[in-house]
Length: 153
Image 1: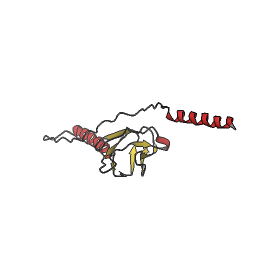
Image 2: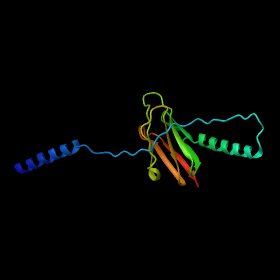
Image 3: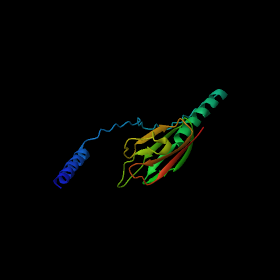
């Protein structure tokens, strides 16, 4: 009987020591850069056809990039579903106010590499999608909603 009591005491001490031990975490996070605003130039002179085509192409690229923004407002993603093309960048912007202000974007299932650091209000996280498919993500702080990015080839 005494051996069993000693065994439980040793086991209890072992579990306490194991639970109190520090575990080393390796945290690899992609660089978060602030998003540059889209700037449109006004040209007073009449451009040539080649210049017009180049300007339209540049404006189209800038506009496409600007539309790939997902605002995090309260517990919602706006829009909750976004369709893009392979190679395009998506920017998540923290627009939260109230009790829960921070956010942390975390990809699920087949896009677990998508993960931001904890972002304060006004901060952004960008990710360029290089493969076609569907990426579901959550805000790991609230975990209340699931958003989707559909990447077309």
